[in-house]
Length: 168
Image (cartoon, rainbow, N blue to C red; front, side, top):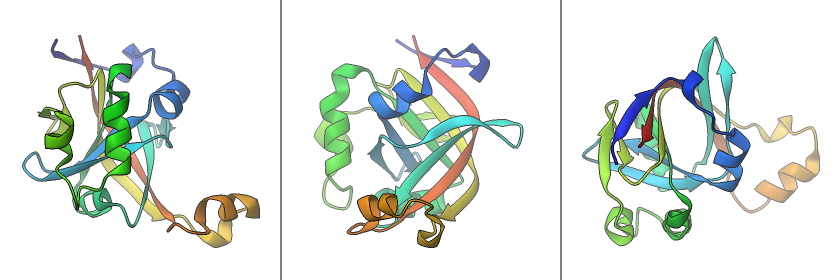
């Protein structure tokens, strides 16, 4: 299998399935020094006339520092047989373990950013906007209570999709 560059118009992926059901690896840093984490929250759409991904990362995640420093990040959607890898990358910190070594993932560079050869779909995104969620802006207090009573707030990142790669 090899990656073929596509346009967003050529995709038939359902973002609700891709994000909420399939999950994805968000990876930030350089091809030489990066971290990845599993995400199951986010959004895909169009903003400021560009196709975009919106990702949310808690400030205590190891990937957060890489994302703050890097102008690019990738979204790697893995096939279902990698569910255990996704679970591992979502429950272990890159501060404590080498996720690539422990999972057997194969890093590749696509569009100047780190991603994984095992992915069926990769979005290379350029950060265009980042902002901390504001606890005073929750309209439904139960949402804040449910998700932020013990854990730190997320920072929202909007990434313009610079390239899409499909592993065929």
